[in-house]
Length: 491
Image (cartoon, rainbow, N blue to C red; front, top):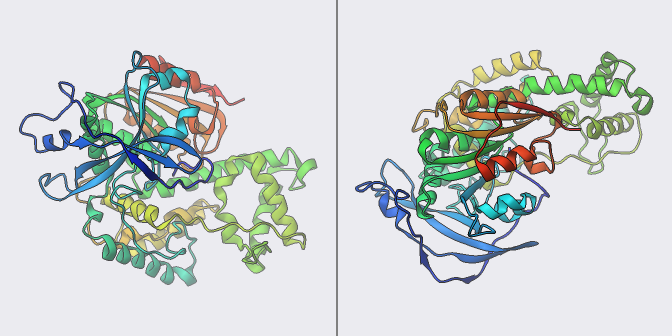
């Protein structure tokens, strides 16, 4: 669920400190008199010039926030923020906080990466504010010291290996609590939203605008629920259904995968002369499942020597939303299985240790809905695989949240408000599915949604020009939403 444009991992290097300044607090921007958070709003920000590999210089600072908002006078942690100033002091409207997803993705470089993609009218009006959420990157990071296998989130269900799957999930939970147990209960979406509001106050803003992608849409929705009067112009790209947080989100990918797979079989069948996968959708489907079965008997040769069994092929289910890209891959797999050239290896989808630690801290700590009985996961994996053969078990099988040592400190956030927001969504998104975005739309009654018909992949505005761009620009520059929900074409 994380924003990845070019695969770079930027390393921030402070090259010089600028004179320390105290953020000027506009009337109403700070917290009420007597609020223990007032002292955080009055802290001094020291903006420093930061540089990244291949990126222009920009400003960074650290904001102190309470570790536990229930005890705001207790231990504090630091949240790293960044800034690219508005292009026009005269036209400046305010700040636009940005989150790239995850949970666990670093967002400090997002303003300088995203700035070239924004229209000049938007750049003129907003200070772009990035941040590494608590526990991430340069914001008091946590770690679990997990192996590559433990950092891979999705695993297929097999009767013979389920015991090992249970032990893997238990080990991830144990390691995380051993390494960061004093912090884990407080790495949640609600606390990150509270951090955002401290940032708002420190920056002297009455309200904040926000751009969130993927998981960032959920975080933005939580902010609107907790701080509706402080929410300004909210843009959610590739939205998640807040009612599904979080296990049902995992399981929701499976039904969407089947829809995308069916669409792909029809597309490939219509181009049988070019690809030779079958003249009908049923024939294409059979070709794929025959390939999976053959790979289970004899793994498809790969250039890295690992080979790909049927489960490894199924694990690529997200690719089916992009029909033109996935078809040559299936053709190459089929040829390799028949003795042709080996295909490039597909590395395991393992995040880095810090991102994985925060991912589970948030997923397990946001909600109390994760089953505690491993057998429930077994039953669900079997049932979901029967219903959704492509990926049902991948979304339903046992996860570390079954063994998380502490239940969520707070109940999951119920999002149900009238705050204005613009939701933009591809029709064919494998991670934030169309059904999930429609769930977000139902939760945000003041929102409008733009669906890109035929749009493929995870991300609309972050992926480049789209038919949603004009509405996005108009909303951020004027505050005006479309009069109604809109469907536009990707072609």
